[in-house]
Image 1 (cartoon, rainbow, N blue to C red):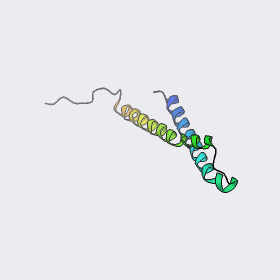
Image 2 (spheres, rainbow, N blue to C red):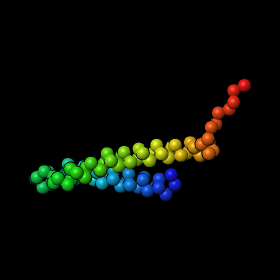
Image 3 (cartoon, rainbow, N blue to C red):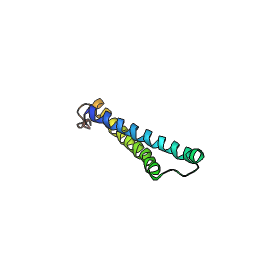
Image 4 (cartoon, rainbow, N blue to C red):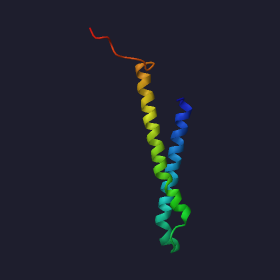
Length: 83
């Protein structure tokens, strides 16, 4: 994975998570302000929060694997022969 792809995944993850949290806040504020329940699209936008969290988790796992492989070199066999 190239560096640009990883940062794009992180940006998507943060964006989705923020949209979901804003929709969650809108859900709780809709009834006290308007006196009615929130529209359907607010409920659908709330699903962006766990999707963003999942993308962030995937980013963290992929970047951690890449960092470990970079520390050890090419990612080849690092075992020493047993004598």
